[in-house]
Amino acid sequence: AMAQGSDSNDASYKSPSPGSRPSSSDDVKKVMRREKNRIAAQKSRMRQTQKADSLHLESENLEKENAALRKEVKQLTEEANYLSSVLSSHEPLCTGLAPQTPDLLYPPHQSSYHRQHIAVPHYQR
Image (tube, rainbow, N blue to C red):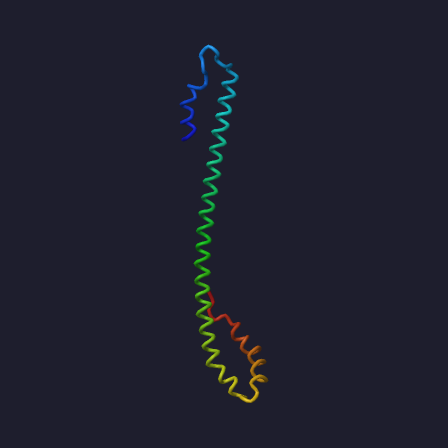
């Protein structure tokens, strides 16, 4: 659109005085150069549009991914809360077995036994 605007004024500055008209090869060069510039500008605009399009797509994908991750965090938080409540209701039973030696019984029990259960994926996506 802009290229046409400048073309309409070209007649005025192409030949300053009709007597000293530049050779036709100069005109040809000028026309070719203008065409080359027009094509370059077109390509540049096309690249800019493509860049904008790909950024738009990338933005949409990141938004989707972000939403999915938020959902996952919410589910994992709920699962963690659930497991915490299960653990806190189960803990008295474990430690209640031998109140005199909680440090002997509890750490190995907690590390081997509970880890197995907590590793079970209750909430599969």
